[in-house]
Image 1: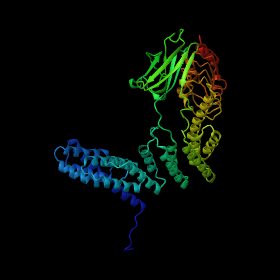
Image 2 (image 1 turned 60 degrees about the vertical axis):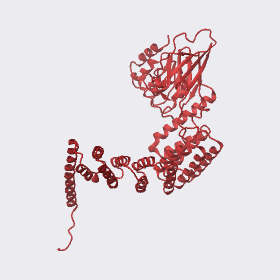
Image 3 (image 1 turned 90 degrees about the vertical axis):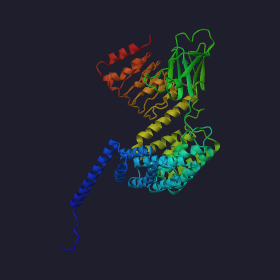
Image 4 (image 1 turned 90 degrees about the horizontal axis):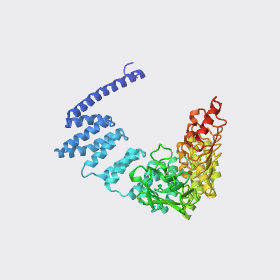
Length: 562
């Protein structure tokens, strides 16, 4: 038996590791206590630096120790500049050692940036090479990407050089999502679209489409290039604008809607109402009475202000110190008037395509169709076909879009909620376009498989809304911006919450049959509808309650117009 190596059992190995961990833990506790004691006593000396160094070399994720090291160096800057310079030069290789222990250490990367900012004669080229080395080991290390941007900024490296760097990385590996993302940050700065803030000039944009297409045709299952392609299809940043001004003589109300949620109670966002060229003191309110920011704001006018023999009244709203304006004319004998931007003219739901860009996107659509023939269950290709169809012609591709959505739900059920909501958004957009083309104020969204309601701020002029036969669980509070709504049909859904009907001033008829309204308290929002005449609730659990009929009669009695 002599001369043979004894093989330790698993229990013995576990015990050995436990003893080693206990030994390390004791040393760590002693060192941490010593560092904490020195910091508490204000002992900013070399020993403190050595203690923190020994700990951080083993565990670089202790933020308090990095803070202590910076406090020591800042303290020494008051009279020990040579020593500070010496420590800073030694700090970079020490930090490199720490980053090799954990390349994603928040504290180590932050401290490295601090050291570089405080050191003199920093070798930024060397630092850039270090970033390249770390990114070569892990191309998605976002800590290193952030640090690279810091280095690029301080070294004054041109954006064009960085764009070339992303091209090299993408050429090596199409799956480098971080490089695609960095590219999306650089392009708007290098090739800005003069008319669309945050977007890329068209000549370069067309080249990027080709680059993305090469990537996802090389590996159709990789998501990086598909996401980048989706960014390319994105719209420009929404600009501040007044999108609608509406006035109602019977209600003595002025309504204003904006392209973004705003807070008119803030002095810098104040909107001024002029009536017949005279400024009128206003108290703007949010329709739901709760929100701070909203697309839609209303104000009450004094009774009789719009009466008289005047042929017309001009209502003018000025915003952003008069830089943005919109007005409407209320003629004698009219009860209401409005001025609203056109969704079609403003290209709210589609891209503004030149002939060249349109041809490129149509060619991409054809290519995606070919890819679908080869890989009919590729979810990225299906989703991109939908996005391309929306960019080119939303209504013209509506039936194909529905087919693709249904296939997406089948091949990727884990993201069913996202696909259903996206489909709902597109269905609402199509409904709004059809309503605009028909020059009506009746919005038909029945049996569209809606799971949610979108673009409610664009429905401020709608008088009749039909959302029956969908999958809605609630009429959201944001529906309160439908200040012109008179008739609401929402039968055959799964509605349990009707907060959206609260504060609708001209709502007269509500149909909520076959939903999930089970308690009398759920009907309480209807009491705020002061002109309600008819409510239909058949097929809801609430109708089986003993006092339901009495409660409904009382509800209608208290809301019936006087």
